[in-house]
Image (tube, rainbow, N blue to C red):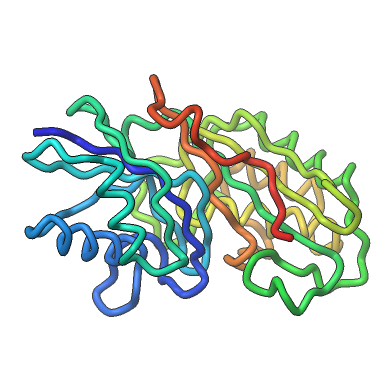
Length: 262
């Protein structure tokens, strides 16, 4: 049975996350409903990972199976005609039957977008830092560098997570001021725990505000215990921006990972 990989972007503002929910709208449900309508039978899709309510994605990947060999370009065109304008299918491609959108992924990259200047036009697309404390790049990146020295991240996992272990292999973690007043936090790993990126972002901003210290961060990582004042940064600043696979079918079609909404 042919397997199809899809590359898409979505604005998560009005969705309860990627994963289908019993009552609330989800990205997965909208795509499954659209595919089922076009193909005349129930279609289930598997995403590369969950996202929280309000989180956005660029270069997200899902897969589905269908017994017929489909015209991928035609299907993509028809899907985009009936999907809402906050979901965009950018590419469809057939892949090997054993390739899996979630379990075949080797790297995932998230970016958190933050501005120190208020904007009435971008309230849902980046987090506006509301405090007078200036951001301190040296302190932010000292914390980011410390994280790269560890493999277990219990301090940055939601308490109701059902994960079997807390190991993540971080390969990149850095804050950058990409233009005046606009900051991007980029983090890359083979996997992420539930709520991990937002908790790490919140921890970094708590350091800047003096709500905790680097010594406390190191102690929590060494002892694998909860942070003294955990704060999950608001969802609307977070983007899943890249998912990597061996022999990636979308290598030449992905959007740039580093960006900031105009």
